Image (cartoon, one colour):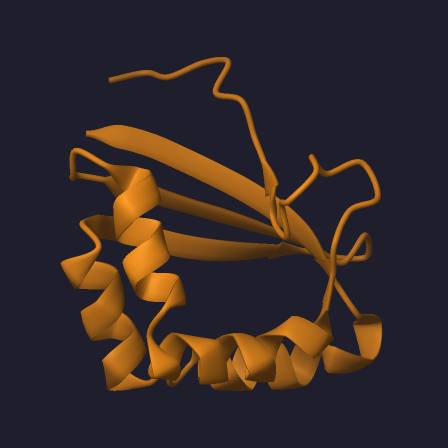
Length: 109
């Protein structure tokens, strides 16, 4: 199992809508996440900085392949079209990233 974390900004005017759509994530999205070997997925909001922190546990053997399958799904594309405009990617994110990856520096098992 691999723990993974990412962060991104959320536009202040979109916070209520972001919370609303995530309170009722589409079943197809939940199914895709499970099939991609993602478990224990949480997103946290930090205000007033308006930062989202995502954490999940990856239980597969090839995250790149699982992520590519998710990205190719019509349902996931629609979900990203819905959520993407509400987000504000960090200027310091790596090339090719939407959510900025975080380095794990401590873990208490």
